[in-house]
Length: 104
Image 1 (cartoon, rainbow, N blue to C red):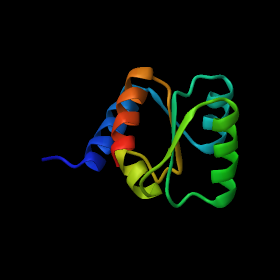
Image 2 (image 1 turned 120 degrees about the vertical axis):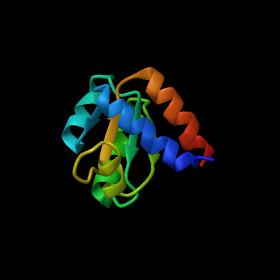
Image 3 (image 1 turned 90 degrees about the vertical axis):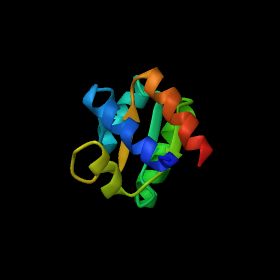
């Protein structure tokens, strides 16, 4: 039985390979502004500043936001260095991830 967390990391990896992910604070903020981001995932160890900035942005643009995983785990899942914030730009991936994240 695969854990829900493992499924989330696997889906993030798939989304990354499909080029449906944006990473990095500034890029994610501009995706949210452009209403391209369907779902935002922040690492649990993001700074308070980053948390607040992205929470405010997501709230004002009505984008779903979740706090999940460490920056190392998120980076590893998408085959990159550690990542603090990810934006999913595909509604299919976002819907599936949202369901799994809400299970946790």
